[in-house]
Amino acid sequence: MKKSYYIDYPQEHIEGQAHRYRCIFCKQETTAINGNLEGHTSYCEYRIQMEKAGFECLSTHPSATIKDADDYD
Ligand SMILES: [Zn+2]
Image 1: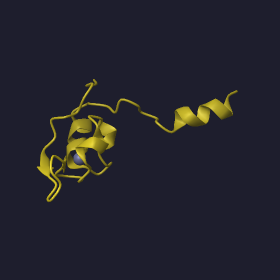
Image 2: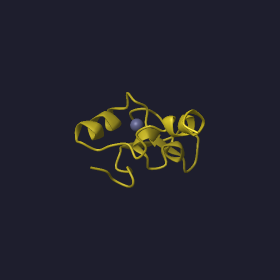
Image 3: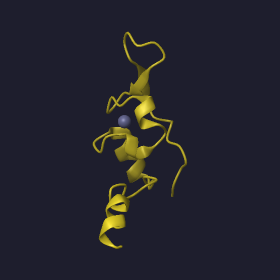
Image 4: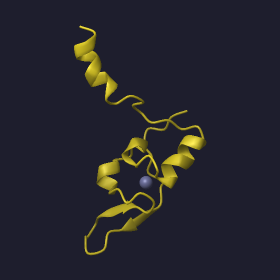
């Protein structure tokens, strides 16, 4: 089960930073998260809850794809 965008996480305004918001759990900026579940830290309560609910990261092995190019050519 996947969603294209994960934007329903609780956010808080970054104090002193106009128009900038972050996840209240892992404190990652919304611009860094960019709607991706993996944009949250692995210990983020929102991410953990989503993964428990059966949602997946869009790219399950983000670093492996880069390695594969060299290893299997
Ligand atoms: Zn988070």
